[in-house]
Image 1 (cartoon, rainbow, N blue to C red):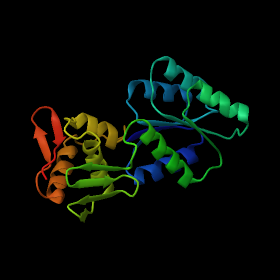
Image 2: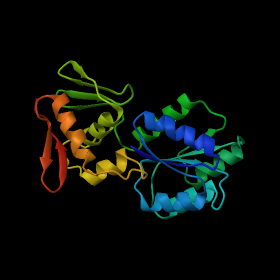
Image 3: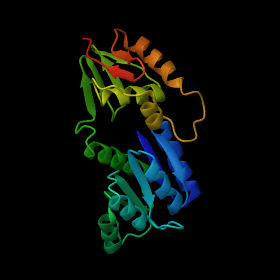
Length: 220
């Protein structure tokens, strides 16, 4: 899943980015509201972490602008303001959830997972395709009763296929959601990870649809 952090406290933003990247998210960061609005408008993010007190365009206006444009990306608003009127203003502007600083990283992570589930990516954290199950909460993959050990990136690439079983997922879609905007390497890196996943999964589950992308199928 690809996240955008819009936070002018650079140390906090960078720390959050490091933590979430280590957990398999593709994370982009910007430090002012105008850039955040631009990024969120042109890039299909799965979730926004949005500070309220931003230079340029504040968080309330940024959220409202996205909603007015029909963008329904989940927004978790981060703020040092803890009054009920401030929380109400954030929710009225279009935020889906509201977290007051300072906050626990564990709580932040749980809120993110909850918002992603609520957005229709599966009410249960456990997804199944044939004899393959993926527990996104525990970050475990099991096939035919055997656990398959995956790296963080391998898990994230497979997740893009598991959430859309039977659908063709393009290489560009996988890049957009697993690698961040700072990635400037070879886009064929996706093929490398697909090859590794095929080897680890055993019997063929990942089909290549020539010129279109990849598809996860039930080969049980």
